[in-house]
Image 1 (cartoon, one colour):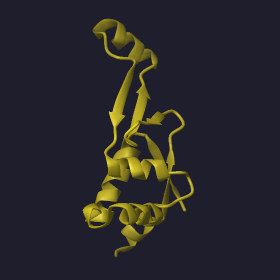
Image 2 (tube, one colour; image 1 turned 180 degrees about the vertical axis):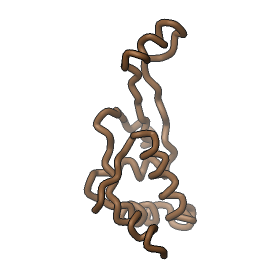
Image 3 (cartoon, helix red, strand yellow; image 1 turned 60 degrees about the vertical axis):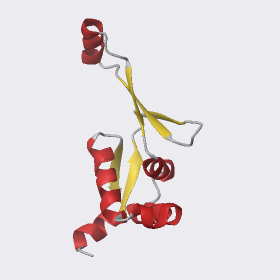
Length: 114
């Protein structure tokens, strides 16, 4: 394992306080993105767009999201996923890195050094 991947495993994801989320009946996490900035309100008036966007995570993404607590690092999250999904999660690290990067790039989480 390269140094870059090793460092990524030690990073700790922290959820954005600006993002709402809830757990649906089927245990799937639903992220709720409010569209309440000035530009969003203007666009809503002009184009009748919704005031929020809802994203349903898949089962693996929901498991990871529920365990992001600002204390667990990416490695610890990978072990939780491995325990729950086993071989179905493979290639585990690549999938988890991609998922964490998507969350980070959309400002749903930030990464801090662990």
